[in-house]
Image (cartoon, rainbow, N blue to C red; front, side, top):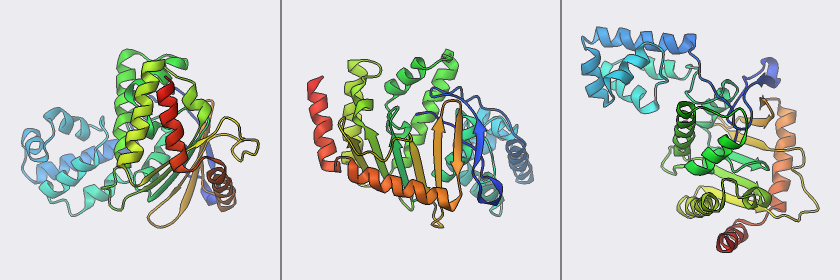
Length: 297
């Protein structure tokens, strides 16, 4: 799955932003908000009379991580923010400031707004006709996807990209509060393509079966190869619902991503997704098909 995003447009209109392709370069860059957050952490640390080494020990992170966060070079993970907030007695300021930080390593600039919404979503719907969604990929499948789409990444960029994608899969956890309800609809052709070869595909099938069987909050459906009536012919789409019950959409193509906020467009995407759900195989039948595909390898 290509990882990229846009920013919410003014007046409820969707914004379109240029970014990386399917394998996406996703080059991270620093930002004023990241540097500001780091300065706030540094200020509270000094107020508490702690060295970077002492803070690192208390928040259970390395000294290098603390230094990188303070210098605005590293995105603060949620557990870092929570622990630092408690250790530094920061009056909720760190937690509130972290919401506005606008950089996530390894994610293309045009995916970051969606990423922030995704992290707190209570419902997330994904239809894919190109690749297996990033939240369901295995490490080797993600690597194969990246190596298939030019420009090819260097070794360090590849490892960074893969690590970021795997870390995002923590979103699937049913232990999230509140947990998120996931619906994935994927074309059978995507699964039959055998991206990366038979071994990579076999591991992918096993992973998909494992995820759906272990996560009560994940629903997985396959659109069969022969489907004369198809509501997804305009391409991939994603929808999410926030804890405030607002809905956002996201679509992605060559060299760009688009965050959708206009209510009329959201309504159209919801209608299409509802049709896709009825046209795809039911979850139980989808898993049966996946098991037959695994057996055919």
